[in-house]
Length: 304
Ligand SMILES: [Zn+2]
Image (cartoon, rainbow, N blue to C red; front, side, top):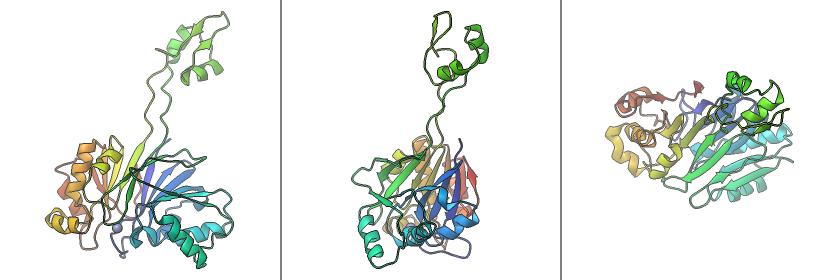
């Protein structure tokens, strides 16, 4: 199983002609989760060919409009589609009250669909999405309002079976091999018990990504991004405007690269660009610190 990232909105504060407000799809075979849901995220998801019925969860970092305003519309569409299974919406404290207020005003139109709101508290933790293969965790970031970043991963995979060795050990081809691959010892017809040791390679870590928006540079972002295949980090301004970035609760591209380097993230995806900056130039500036940096562009898929 692979993970692909599809940026659905890469602008900070407001959409522009080329960049929508914050949203990013994390996609695997047959399912996806949405990180943030800025205005226009729903239409961008359709343009990307994503099926709304396969959406497992929405992870909202904070309640600023450029990360939230697309959610009422998305929920309304899922309600109209008659979605049967519940939708998990994780986010900061205050999310439940806000959605309840919109519901009472008649703004949501979710119909019979169950919206399972999981407000993150304190240091965050596991975000349980029943029936989903995605493993999600949250950590608090440092912005002007309560904000949580997320780590999204797929489960580890079983190691590769060495068939030459299982043959040599006398294990017949068939269902016993599946048991060995899953790490279980098997009993052969002659009564011998054979364990997986030496016959199956080490388990392979499932692909993982982290999403750190909006935040000043903070230890939690390092924590979230530890060893991931891709850290998606906000980069609102170029480094010359670091003071302005911090004043507004944001980071620069160079700072995001320092976070990625410290976390030993394999790759860094910069996003959440102020309309006043050039994303590509910002990535160039940061490459001295981390070699593998992509400046996210709306709808430009990033395979991990
Ligand atoms: Zn923002």
